[in-house]
Amino acid sequence: MARIYTNPDTPKVDIPQYDLLTFLFESEHSRLSTHHTPIYQDPTLHVDALNPSNYLTRASLLDASQRVAGVLRRRYNVGASGPGKDVVTVISHGQILLPAVFFGVIIAGGIFAAVSPHSSANDMARQVTKSRSSLIISGPEFVDLSVKAAQQTGRSSDSVLVLDSAKPRSLSPLSRDRNLIAEEEPLAWEHITDPEPLRTVPIVLLWSSGTSGLPKAVKISHINLVSEVFLTALNARARAAKEILAGRAPPPFRVLAHLSVSHVAGLISCLVGPTYNAGVVFWLPKYKWSDLLEGVRKYQITMFGSVPSVFLRIAKSPEVKDHFRSVVSAQSGSAPMDKDLQTAVSTRIGPPGQGIGQLWGLSETTGAVTLQSSERKDTDGSIGDILPGVEIRKVDDDLNDTEPEEPGELLVRGPQVTQGYWEDAAATEAAFVTFPGEDGQPWLRTGDIAVYRNGFFHIVDRKKELLKYKGYQVAPAELEGVLFTHPKIEEAVVIGVPGTEPLEVGSDLPRAYVVKKPGVELEEQEVRDFIAANCAPYKQLRGGVVFVDELPKNVAGKYLRRELRDLARKEFAKPSKL
Picture 1 (cartoon, rainbow, N blue to C red):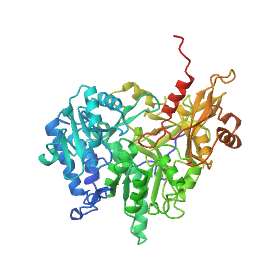
Picture 2: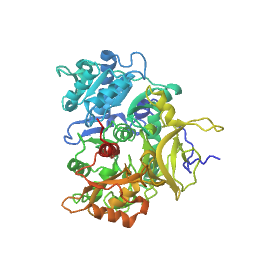
Picture 3: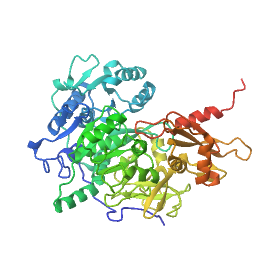
Picture 4: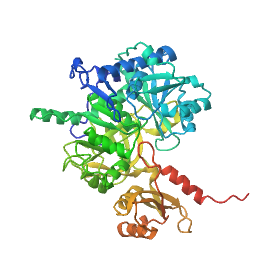
């Protein structure tokens, strides 16, 4: 019999049936709507963190969004042939007009597809081609890259527009001689009530590698986004209600935008979630450690979501004093956080005893499907509570349900799960599985391996990252968690390299890539001895230790293991006989 895990208190929940704009700006559910915030108050929503006199209110955000939509529809025919067909590619560092572009693309009937600011021209050209995007909106710092990518795909430079939030705020052609949003009249959005297009028509593409292969475009619909922000806010809303009943005002909702909106974490935490909660987003142009520290303290940030590499620096940096004391909710995502790191960083986040939680999700799930509730303080490295309305099961390689404490791949279904990948039927088919004799509804294969312990899931590793040594499974995340506790190690990533000795052929030998703490002496043997003292014999660093100045990361702070594997693969490649 199938073993399906759900939220024990709220296994089912009704999702509001609105298009995203109506849900955020007009529905009774949104704190920003006039049901909760009178129109005359016109709250501030988006602020330039380095120039706080430059900001957008609810009224100015809506006006800018609808003017962007007018430009896209009337001048570039975005959405003219119907919604969910025309992709607008966006590349920019953080700026306050990004939300206006996001909402403007959706209002016009287009599909918002952000590209990572770390992309090369080839990367960007590949995504522009695959999505069939005919228009690129670029921040000023990416104009040359955007023009090069456009030219590589056979598009003219006229397909590139420049977005600049510095006053006077503008959306302009490359010549910068006209401000199109100042010239254009606003375009109102269509209020969609038919549940089928709400569920199936894409409004966002998120680029993801899935469990394997080159990046694919994940289709995100109105209901995917509505579900995600609605479900993740349920616990916080309940907590706020208790505060009000007790005569205490809930804390303000303040976010420091430091994650790219090309990543689902940045999309939800900077563009959608704060709008739903009538929060203020303070935008950093890009992630810079000193600006992050100053911004969190200066603006008394209350909601801080980030990635393990940022939390690792918070835990270890001597610069961190009381910077994060204003934080009332801290969540780590994008990659598993070891319980030792969770414990260490908890002493530096929020008031004493608050701690930090983890959430878990993917681009394919529009973000979180688990989230630690405010009532529970976790120090065991779990990924939190299953969101209401979400179902999870755990299976082995043959898709048999596993015992709770036995590792297995997590499968997910729920209203925030994607319908599949943009124009890639094969990848979509591979991403889902159905079980004969059951209800026929597909489950998303996440590629994440977990155990279920003490009532919560704990991520062990990625399926494709698990190493095999003489038949034993070795989880890189486990070794990395041990290495984190070494007093001389700043960061570490473990990958597998091929065995070359007769008894090791076919095995993965764990290798650690290590960043030493500044000013310390550390030799390979000391690292090997540390693992030997803390891990089983089959988990030893037989592939060696490589010291590096920095580890490759993507825009969301996730370690790019693939780049390290590529380096190792070249090292172990057989020399050509030519």
